[in-house]
Length: 572
Image (cartoon, rainbow, N blue to C red; front, top):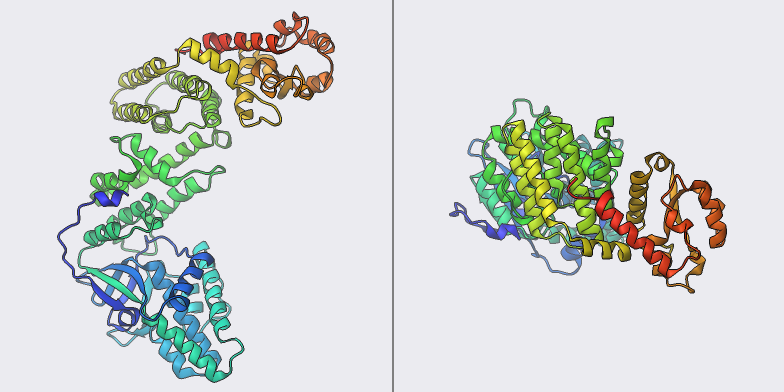
């Protein structure tokens, strides 16, 4: 895990063991910064926490470290770095217990529980002990307040998640006292309260925000909090703290747009992978586990944070175009680029993403001519068709580093002539890595197979058949087509399925012709296909006297040669 590579600073703190009662009854108020991730404990996590606290362990159970920091000018106010989710859950549990005490008519115990939720500040004004810079009227009025507003409804996704969690907590508390008489209910509720307040944490308090986050990153090994996207959000927005109007939080809104711009796509895009590819499209190569450290070393000032956040937002749409080319907008001039990107999604390759992003960025800024971009996209498509989809070579780290290097050099180029040269260099490097003729042709003839039962490579086979038809007859290829087996699939058993499904036995034909051919004999199919001999590459079928394994193999070999020498020829 990358946090193990971080060097701990000289400590300016002394960790202490505290109970939740000591934390909540002390002089301090706890503030959740606006950039912390939303509350996200679902029913499964709540169930685990409930069992740990109330069922499987005695009072004083340890629930992990909490990290906070204090500004010297803020008085009794601590910023929560690590512990937000647990503190929010504990506060909701106290609110549920307060409500339950009130429901059984014990206002004194209800008020006692509420004292761990709200207390007077220095000016004797009541304040909630756990506060958030992203104030939620629903949480304040419906959950935290002792005078609950029963009409309050959540208005955001986070509030809806909190409502579900609080409803679940209240349900569990009610189950603990169900069927008991009043004294038994009171005893059960006090037991829950005492177990909760006796929970212990390692309390780590800093006077320095940066040190607090280093400690957080080093101590916290629970996985979810260590995703690059969460760490980067916290870091960037901590640098951008201190706007005059906290209600106009433009940088937090900008980060939300970055995240939603990626996660609202119609395909599944990992935002952490976006951050890695975005970095590699312009900066030195790093592995995913070292990405956040690289961001921190590069972004040290408010100005650089503003710049990088703006760039991240601007490039989200470009990355969406790479990952879902069929669902984004392209000009007619860019249709060839869209087709190449669609092919790469069919191949399932992600290694080129940094250089693809760098090229689309250059296109957006008019920094290189479109013809050079089109030929480079086409070269990448043809290389991965040969190297990945047909020859079945795995793209090693060397391939990823090659793409990252060319992306970085393209981004850093100062003139159009330099950018054209970098694109030419990339195309040359790909041609040099392409498989040799014998490997490609033998793999093409044997690896492209499709039947109803051998459908894993259906999209790839469709891509191959359509692309070959577009090469031989672009006009015919404009019609919607489906796969036709010359030797029909009902012959599986007489012939091996890999023979019937072989590329040499397949045609890409409109549905009307497929229906006309149906399961007719080979001679009958030939008579029908003769009507279309000018529109399709079928002369070897029409000249054959019979159709079986030998003929299919011969045709597959011919298509392999045509593919290597013409259709997917390198260099472009």
